[in-house]
Length: 171
Image (tube, rainbow, N blue to C red; front, side):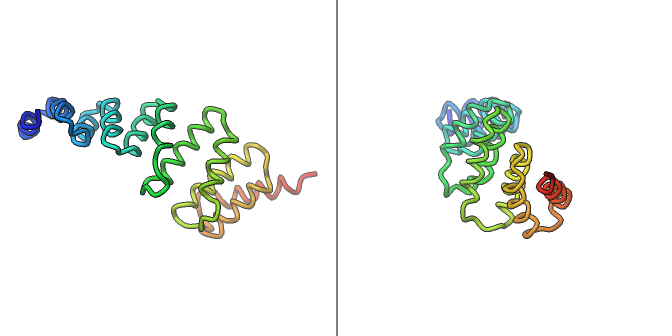
């Protein structure tokens, strides 16, 4: 199957090449080709087989297979280069499914002791937004101030800080 896969690939027959790579046990090649031709389900499955959990989880998320996305993304080790993005996706899914407390816990764990930098500023922003939706104005303000301290012009940070200050000042 591997030689057939390479022949199909050279002939620009990506669908058959992907099939043959899958049969030959080369899931990363199969995944890339399935992804290229729009077969996200098979791409995700092969990325998962290849141990490329972030890529697999991201595809499941894009297909709105949220439970599967969570299952795959939560297997990513903390040391993975895509750990923060994966955690953000899991947090968004949890929030969308109504598990707001779990989403908040997920974001808090990532931010515990983490510096305000380009990788964590979006977590702080999203956590602050969730806290605002819950009416936790003081804690939301804390995270918004951290975002503003890192980037005073980040998204709508000024408007959010003004809103939070108004809410805290209300009797």
